[in-house]
Amino acid sequence: MKMVKGIIRPEKVEAVVDALAEAGFVALTKIDVVGRGKQKGLDVGSIHYDELPKTMLMIVTEDEDADNIADIIIDNGRTGHYGDGKIFVTPVEETYTIRTAAKGV
Image (cartoon, rainbow, N blue to C red; front, side, top):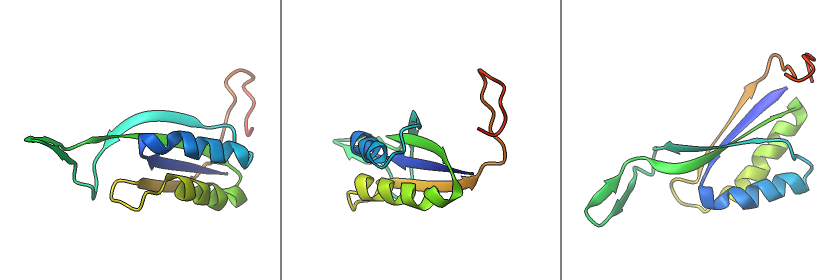
């Protein structure tokens, strides 16, 4: 299994989540986060905002679906400007369902 973490612009979340659901990926976790990177913040008048709001989507999926999920996030989250975000794909060794204590689901 793989975990796909997509950190995207907040204004793109609805489009990305809708596209993922349309492709059959309905289970995800959404977290409001702040971050900074190549975008280097934002200047509004004399105020410099070093860290900007982003949203992180986390999806655990079968190995063969990870690339498809990343493509959906890219296609629906991209504006073509700095600050569009980043996607991280990592292996998942174990999963547990808290309610049933089932392992591996």
